[in-house]
Length: 229
Ligand code: MN
Image (cartoon, rainbow, N blue to C red; front, top):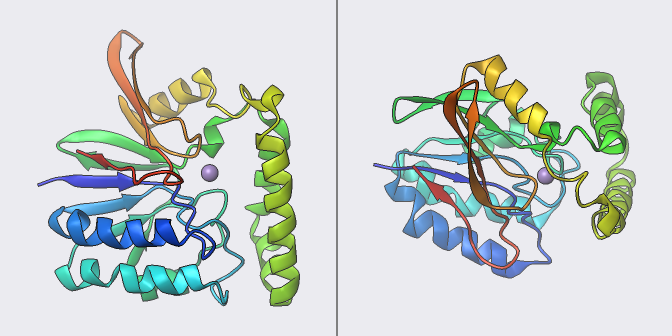
């Protein structure tokens, strides 16, 4: 049977067609697979497990057939939903993975990442990432009232939209080739699967004289997108 990989659904109550597509994907595809891996940016934003975001509720319901079928579902954080915590994961039946994670898929060591850590040319983003992944920063943020956290998320999204639509940032927002090679070497893998860049492709290249592959998952803005191995 197959193992399925998805990322960058950016689930949001404002995009009901993606919520519907996800429900169909679970019923038509995922329940028949060995396992489902979600490689980050499942949600457009996540301000804490106490969020009132209806997309979070819809996802719990949408995943119900997978829980009933006893199929494992793994999740690693993206840059939008890095605050998704153990409490929500337990309710959803998600097994949280570290980023990066090494898994055996069809007997091959495979490196799984969201992909944002590979975009090392984007210094402004990497600085924010370092800050916001610190446990002290997260504790302080999660202790703030919900409306303050929602306002912060709205502002971050507006800034992200401005930044990503600026063409001069296009190269910065793709992965750095040296970072890809370093990650594969560090984990003894020749295959990498990641999302984040919304540039779906399968790149084949040589790593230290051996054939390597980098598979980039697509986003779900216009259509559903998944990888089956
Ligand atoms: Mn991302």
